[in-house]
Length: 217
Image (cartoon, rainbow, N blue to C red; front, side, top):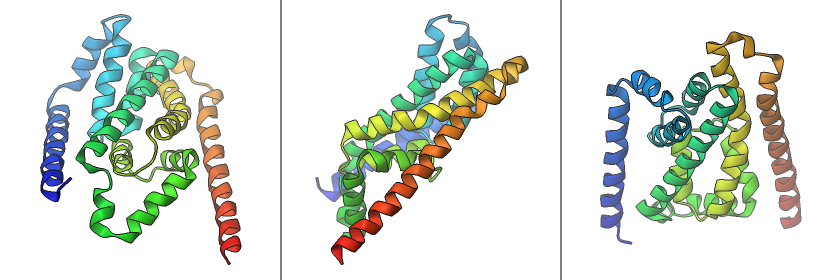
C-alpha cells in the first residue's frame, strides 16, 4: 500500500472517529440511554452496540461499564459491558488493519519492528498484559494492535479475558449506585483477581526475559 493511500485511509478513519465523538459529546446520551433501557430484552443488545461505538471513539471504558451496571443491573450490565468491549476491540483492530498493517514500522524503522516482534512472540500474554495495565484508552490500544502482526484470535481472546474482571467490578458498582443494597465486599473480588493476574504476567515476563538474555549471552 502506498503512503498516499495510507494517509487517505487514516484521514477517513480520523474523520469517522471525530464525527462519532462529536455526536457523543453533543447528543443527550443520558436521555438516549433511558429510552434504550426501556426497550426490554433488546436493551442489552442496543446498549452493547452503542457502548462499543463509544469505546471506539476513546470514551473511557470505566464510564461505559458503570453506566451498563446502573441501567441494566449487575449481572446483565456486566455481560453487556463485556460485549461492548469485544465489539470495540474487533472494530478498532480491523480499522487499524484497514489503515495499514505495518505502516508505523515501515515509517520509523527498527524500533517498532522489534516491538512488533516482541508482541508476536509473547502472543496471548502480551495482549493480557497490555489490556490489564491502563497504558492508553481502550479503543486506542485496539487501533494500535491492528497495525501490528499480532494474530487476531490471540488479540480478541486476550482482550476478552482481560476485560472480564473490570466489567464485573464496575458493573456491580454501577448497579450499587442505583441500588446501594447490592454493594458488598465481593464486588471488588474481580478487580483483585485482575490485579493478581497482571502482577503474575509481569513477573513471568521479567523472568522469561532474563532467561532469554542469559541464553543469548
